[in-house]
Image 1 (cartoon, rainbow, N blue to C red):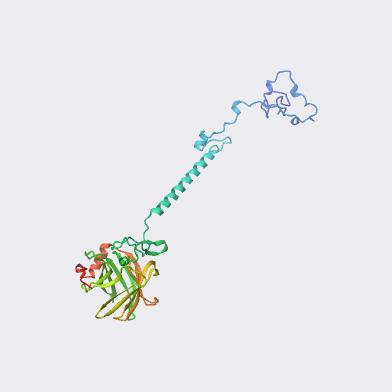
Image 2: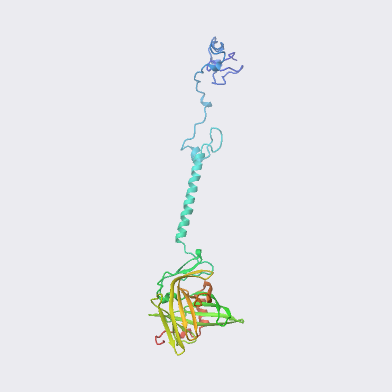
Length: 356
């Protein structure tokens, strides 16, 4: 056991009975015998305080006592993210790499979802909203019309608005209308459009049905396209044809029909009008004023591309005579069957150009 009071290596005070210095690890028993310099009192001028004396450089500790080497960028702790750090804390050595990996994954997920969402949004085919149907194309050969359900608008025309056939109803629609009759009564009418007549000139047929006292009634009519415009044939009078709209439609344009009963005059009042039907907005409507001198009847009729007549109002536009309240797409075969049911003459309808 050493009797030294101060460490010969660093000058620190030794604990009696300890072989190694607690500060620098100096082995006190390795000192040569007879050398008592370490036990001598501190040199003069230090005031008896060994800490005041500058300590010499301590020797390197043994290899068994050195700290573990730090993990490198490519070491196991960095790559696995579960390294044992110098303080014994799991993940301390590789935490930076683990966080970086998680951030990279998060960024990739955001880019994937964001890019996929944008692609889906740009390439998606929108489904029509409730009660709004989208015409695929009109039977007269015009382009399709589109709808914007997010703004609750009915089909927007992408066709020639000056062409009469643009305003024919597309086959496969079922529309509901609220009707105020001239006698003061009111009711609900359903109109179904379909393609049943094989003659090419007959573009579309429609039937209107209503229920009165539990019994259903209906009648049909067929629309024909000619070079100067569109005409209609009532199913119960297949040999007569009447003008509907004329081609090259412009504001102020007029046409008329006259027979032994009297004269009917039509005039284009406006074009490209947006009509608010309550359940939807319909754009690019054509407004035609009708003056039927035979029965002393005047009205404003609203035609929509791909939908046909969507509203009929009083000349001032205040009162609704005939107003669409719902619009849906139905199966083509079902629509054709409905048209045939209420159009007993559908198979003999034709446009032989002998009708006037």
